[in-house]
Image (tube, one colour):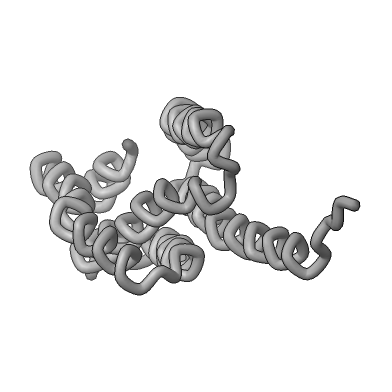
Length: 169
């Protein structure tokens, strides 16, 4: 939401800054069905989500110092963000019992909407308080890193569940 301001502050016209920022939405338009097909055929949902989170972490970290190649970087952000939602939504039936599937999706959508509501305000607040776009991109990189950490924790939790089955007797 503030990347156009960041780009304008670095010499881009308002039109070009908006164009560059909006271009991060091109890869999801084209790649989301492909990612869905891949997870259907290959699986590896947690791995794909983790790769997306790590790629977002790296690319968000690079934005403030990479004005000279901002367009390819923004396209990388678009590709990276495409790797997270399709496998996340398809992961719900694997981690939630069928009886609680509606609740699982409800929680996912609630968290998504909280991110949409709180994310931009938090990033903007960090920008204002720190007086630096670098701090806000660092916050976004940290949040993206939480994607990968969440997948590691989920994998660990599910592995522990299978390693230590509960026997009813």
